[in-house]
Image (cartoon, rainbow, N blue to C red):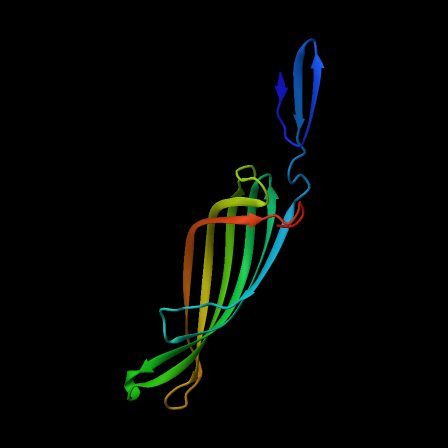
Length: 168
């Protein structure tokens, strides 16, 4: 006879047989919400006309058992240099401001790996808006020159590292 749960084990002998009871406190029974922030810069090694600026991202999420629902916002600024063939191959410089929102549904595979690493898998969808501003044109022109939009979706696969039961 065995009951399976997993944190504290006790063994007792009754009528000549051994009864093992393992009880488990849920690994994350008290977690409800999470938040994260990221500060960084982008790298485009195969593109010579983009200079990286900064990127600031944040997200909030809620747990539903082992599932996670998340929403977030990212803001980034980069510089772009383009050849202007109309003016004797001079270069025009642009600032690119990028704004992105995302929504994700993820699932933590809590008991797959031993220790502090927790695999995460899910789906993410995002909307990105970019605003281009000419900062130095061949003829001294400057100003807003256009924008672009994109919708992206795809899988998310990763690992969370648990510092303790409250922080990962």
